[in-house]
Length: 353
Image 1 (cartoon, one colour):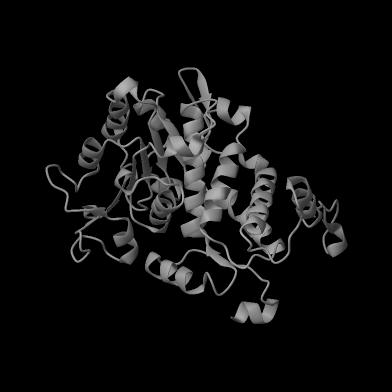
Image 2: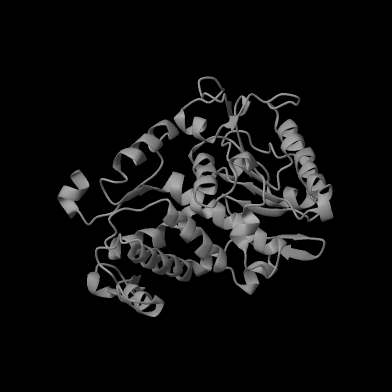
């Protein structure tokens, strides 16, 4: 309330870097009281889904049914922090991926719960929400390799945070083999190593390409340098929420949204995936190059504002069509101007453009 008292009820509250056990309850407590969202949970989830959609574009060039293709995929989330829990929920609740196609692990292995929900190895309510039904049996559900060999995922996403290089050669080769054994030869495995900093990454870009013999589609939380493998240059996509929050916040703020539903993060994910250009695709990047962040953010902002208007949540409509909303947001966009010499020349050297 201090922020709204100081900046008015129109201000947007974006928060992150809270412990998982605090972040989810805070989000639930305030998401409908103030214009707010948690970037670790919702922003990261959105960019993860966007990167998956980008990976599907690489798997199936020219596909116009990315969400439909997504619903056919199986996903293993290794690690049960805010990023993976938020991503699992977005896939289940907004993308329509069947719950049984999503597996999440914690330090005890596959997260599970009984039919009644009274038993299980979940550590909090948020883990319980994404838990598989029934205690795993008939395989080693406490090791990553055991999980992969049993569930046979198309997508592996790591956000463990404290076990660097846990996606070793055997893990990557298993992901490749899983695809080869699927009807029709399957597709290329998608592997994301989201832990930061680089020293904590589940695997490096170079090792992922090398261990998979160039088959894996790779993305990472830390931006890895381009890798040339078998004479082909690959530019790993950086799966970072900076592709989401600038446009989400800008669009929601200027249309004076009443709240920010989870649905909008799915909308933003699709926009970012569609913002991939031919250069990105040629470089096998699952997300646009960061040099295009301003345009990508604008694309997200426009779609968010239009969705808010369609959903009846915009107190201040910005236009009747894409062109009008785009122009309205461009008119409100602040752009810094480089000062040739010295500092202290005042705000006249910055502009809304």
